[in-house]
Image (cartoon, rainbow, N blue to C red; front, top):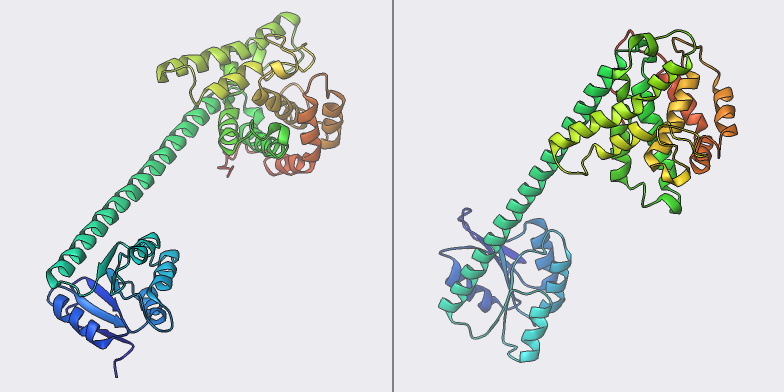
Length: 379
């Protein structure tokens, strides 16, 4: 009796799985191919599926008319399976009708050979299809390598971008040590707001995952312009005079100009710093038009800047500054709520109110690190 499967030695050779319920056909295939290939055999389609799944061959020669499961059904299942879908299948059958051949090829077979078969032709067909498969595998591996290389380089660029932004922002923050973890808190606050608003159909397109990542990355540069404000104004422990306040307000313009200079070095009008420029220039604009530096109103204010306005206000209210003490969380929430539609975008206020508990958690967790160093925060 013919065993369910058989395998001859010579492990370095490509493996051909011969699927046929007739012993003579398996013996013939073995005689033709044994010098160049290792031969496995299965007497029906069901066994062939088990063999191919357990140890995929390099190529399959398969009859059409078999008991238990015919060749067409076996081919269909092999092509549906992730492990076996790329194995070339050559139908080797006495069914010579054009319709039969068309059906076999439509199911994904690589070739359709009609019996009686010429040994040289069979050997040549197998060699050709193995070479084609090898070429496809090389191309697929190359594409996979290129995809991984692109992802790695994008990651490296992203790390470089974030490091550059944090370096610039931290330089500005060293002018005012009492701000402590302000940069990291701001990143976490604005991330929470953007992700919350992305769930609203109205803002779904504006807050794609890529846009949210860019907003979070850019947020530390919102006050980069303060590096150009004199110490006697920036670090003044009491209220600013009208003249001093006008000078303080120029930090938005200084910040925009600094980022624009960096953009010109990078080249192009739109860079990863464009969002940072919008935030730095416009985060002190107010919904009702009474803000600065341009007096923009409502949706004329860039959306990232509208988020930053609430983030900056909440953090300023709940943190100690050289000129004031922190107010309690509930008082900060009340102040922001009262300014909805005046200072702040009502939609952003609504998102903030839904997240106020999360804001409180972040404010407490990163309350003070001025003397401990700024921690790395997973965003």
